[in-house]
Image (cartoon, rainbow, N blue to C red):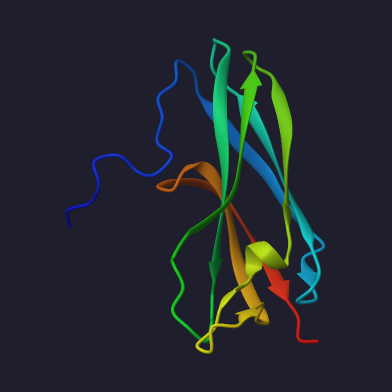
Length: 134
């Protein structure tokens, strides 16, 4: 199936990066709550380099059709060869919500696939965030 030549967020580098230890804390929140997503990124190459760490969400179930991947954050980091950094993202109602059929902004209960990677096509780590009923 044909697709775009380059995925959203695609970039080139003279080094390589490894993503590890994604964590969502807390893993279960109320609709008006917030969570923190952290991931460790390591420069596994022999040169210093920049990486744009990207955070995407996907609602597993929703009352209206939602995108497969929604960009909800990004962070540019610089790493020396062999260096690691922890990258942190905050998720709240503004990130989890959408407009329902009545055009009201809502955060529906359910599970979200939290994805972190180097581009929309290069997802390196997954975790789950659950929004509980009030």
